[in-house]
Image (cartoon, rainbow, N blue to C red; front, side, top):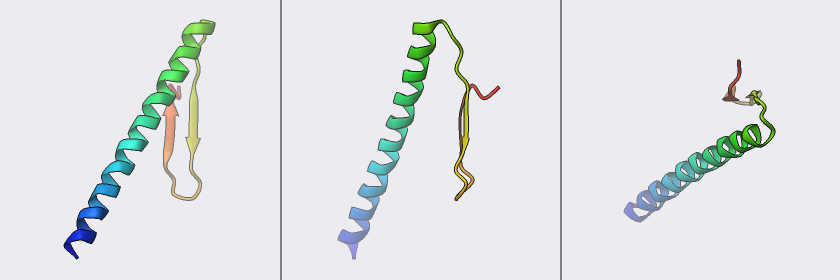
Length: 59
């Protein structure tokens, strides 16, 4: 049981790390596009299943 709990915590930690890394890369890519084309990009999305919102300069 202890091994299972330890493995579960490791997997959860890796998932959180990967999600944060992915979001950071997306923000960096949007900022790169803004700089390259001298433009402003705004994104607002809602996951209809869980209500989670993702935004980048939504105004």
